[in-house]
Image (cartoon, rainbow, N blue to C red; front, side, top):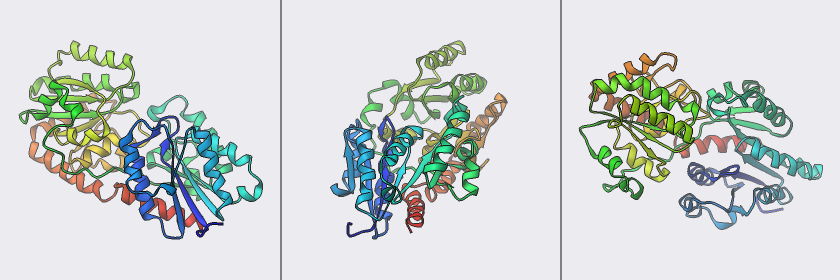
Length: 392
């Protein structure tokens, strides 16, 4: 046995896609928050295409605390092998079914004595945009979780409500609601980052202080309702020639083409811009040059597109989905609208456009509201409290 009898392993990636920047920041805060009697490990596959995210981890964590392998299967094997060195090992997985199946298989291959040392905690989701697979897959996962996992973490109450069996897990002490976090936004550089600086039209829009800029951070998928938003906002934009709408993200070419077609049909080419993907590290600069965020999504697992703008001091107009249910306070941090009533988004857009002083004040209120609740440090302390309780 090692000097410490307990260990916690945080899988800092979504299965199949590699390390996420916000998971890197969260992993660092978990390492800092872990009590001295728990050995902490950050685990991810060594195929990361985003060196900036790996740098966040490697700048803080000592090399022995980072577990890297060339494949996820090898990473799983290395994680569960820690059960031979500690009396108890908590492994916190994410990525839904993709990670669950690998850890379940690896656990089954161990003898019962080692199995008893492993404690599985999983962060799960509700299948965004109300996918057809939400009901059968979440029901199936719930069965696996009940059999093999000690605790399931839901990213917000909305996610638990839309996961079959989610609230039952919470009531039975097998589930908890702990949000994802957001890295604090510092003061951005005066000069634009290279990705934004290379897009002349985007840069001109962002620097023009006479314009009022709505921003929507979301990939182009049917459930993100880009086409709906163009049609719904068209009357408002035509009344307010100073208004602009910026769509940031990539995704389905079919959805992109449909969005562009409606923009042209409504003759809004000058007021709506599809910027393409914006690198995560460039998002803060972009947001601080906008006035208001807008999120017409039909469903969200969590919703960084609600949270990140508030960290940048923007009010948010959005639907009651994901974390939006918890952080959009009408008239305080933004306004809620209803997808079934396009006039509702027109009404709230008119409000923020015609009272820019109140809009700015809402943005500052939003920043203060999320800044104490949704930092990675705050989230890490909630998770460490959970780890400590389960490892006791």
